[in-house]
Length: 104
Image (cartoon, rainbow, N blue to C red; front, side, top):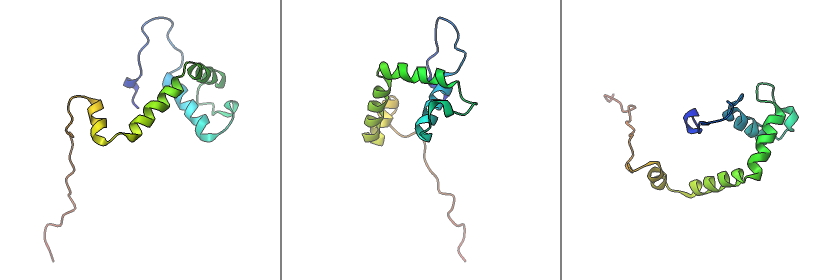
């Protein structure tokens, strides 16, 4: 996911940490299976990440993410392209450049 996918805040105090880093830290904990306090120091503070995780869990955000991912997993490539916008046709093609130019 690129940075442009995140909504920008319109009011209030500017965040001191990036939400992308918070999500990366949560995924690190889930993937590594370690405790919150064993997070690497290059990620945001463990209490900050944990508070976001709890808040999102109370609001049901993780459940919504799982529901969307389950739906996307069952979707066909054509259905996924329709979700992207009105242009249903693929916009890219593959050209095989391995074809030999001459035979021996």
